[in-house]
Image (cartoon, rainbow, N blue to C red; front, side):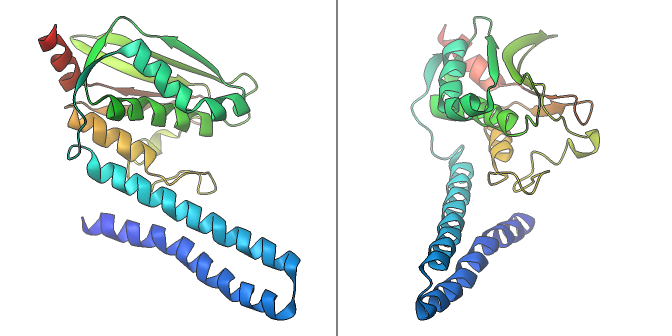
Length: 228
């Protein structure tokens, strides 16, 4: 908790510093009557406040997982994935990413909104780190590994050095500091997966080799089976 509090304080301080700094510039712009500089400085302030709002929303989402739960329902896996992909459709279209869904008939049982967030965040993350791949592609599906049902989101993007595989699920961790986002998306994925008694892990051979995120959801599967 102490480490988490330090990270939150550090991460929220940056946009506040930006707002404070550019408010000073705005005062100068008004005194000098420079409308062009005023517009630019207000743009920086607006960007900082939007960034802080996103971070606070993600923090709230993490805090609510496991505490605020919608009524559980049966969910078809393929439908769930398609709805999750629709949410990120804009970013997918801009990046020109081909998305392929190969989901075996699987029924999940749980909070549909939380389950959608897992696939949505993983797809959004894959799009964000696609790099300059000329034929970007994301594959989503499910495989059997022994007695486990394992879900996956695989991309052919920039890949991740094996040394950093454990870090990507930590709150506020961003391997590319210049990338968009708050660094909480994968932390939220891990939180939701753990609430469903599962685990999530990353496989990637390194830079330029793509990434595959895999996870299990035993609680959601057991819930669905008990209903059937």
